[in-house]
Length: 413
Image 1: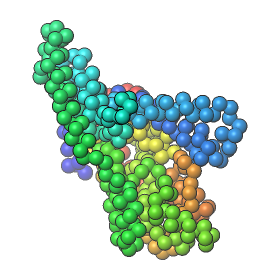
Image 2: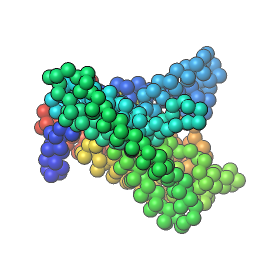
Image 3: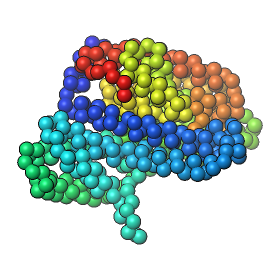
Image 4: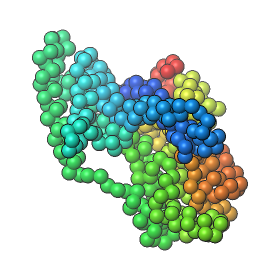
C-alpha cells in the first residue's frame, strides 16, 4: 500500500497528470449536464425506458417528444462528442503548463481532432467517426498534448502571434490528415459480435472465463477512456440472449436457459451497478467515509446518473480516469461480483436473467427484472453492493491521503 501511495504522489506531481486533471475538471460540468440529459431522455422520456414504462410517462406528459428531442440535443453535443472537448482542453493546458499562455493551442487541438475524426460522405456533408468522438478520449488527450507541445515549441508568446500561428497550424493539420488516412485503413472491429459467437460455439466453462476476461478488459479500457468490448447496457439482441429468452418463454421459467454465462447474465446483471467499475458502490463509500468536501460533492451530483448506470460524472469529476488508486478496485470489484454470480448460477441458487429489461433499468434491478421477479437475485444484488463498498473503503481513505499529500485544494467544484 505504501508503494502505491508513493507512486501515486509522484505521478500526481508530474506535469502530464496536472494537464489531464485540469482538462477533466474543465470537462466535468459539460459531462454532468450531458449525463443528466441522457438519463432523462432514455429512462424518462423514451416509451421503452424504465421510468417511462413504470409510470406511463409518455402517455400523460405533454410535449414529451419535444422534451426528449431537447435532451437528445444536449446529450449528443456533450457526451456524444466528449473527446472533442478533451482535445481542446489538453492542448490548452499543455501550453499553459509549459509557460505559454497562447490562444492558438486549444484551437489547434480542436481542429486536429476534427480532422482525425472526419469521414467524407457521398453528399458532401461533414460526418465524423462516432466511435472516436464518444469513446476516443484517450486519443484526444494525446492529440491535444502534442498540439500543445508543438505550440510551445514554435510560438513565442512575447511576440505577435498572428504570423507565428501559420507554422504550427500547418504541421498539426498535415499530421492530423495523415492520421485520418491511417485510421480509415484500420477500420472497425466488431468485438461484441465475436464475443457472442464465442459464447455460442464453446462450452460453458470456456464461455465463463471468456466473459470474465472481456469484463475485465471492458473495465480496464473504460478506465483508460476507451470503449470496451461490452456495451453500457444489456441489449438482449445477441444470439445467446435470444436463445435464453426463447427457452425461458417456452418453459415459462429462466432456470433452464442454455447459456448461463454471458455478458448479460453476469456482467450487466451483477457487475455494472452504476456503470463500469461498480461506481454506485464507490459513491456510497465516498459519501460515508471520505473526508474530502470536493469528492463528496462530486459524488452527490453523480448519484442520479449512477442510479441509471451512467458513470461519466464520477469518471471525470473524481477523477477515476487514469487514477492508479482506483484502477485496482475498478477491476477487482466487478470481477468479484461476476465470480460470485457465476457460482450461484452454477449451483442453481438463482436463475439467469433471460427476459428483456427496460432501457435505463438501475443496475441492481436488471437481474431481478430479467429473471421475472426472482427475489433472491435482488437480495444477492444488494449483498454485492455491500461487499463492493467494503472493498472500496480502504482505497477511498488512501485517495484522501494522496490528495492531502500532493497539496490539492479542497474547494468545491
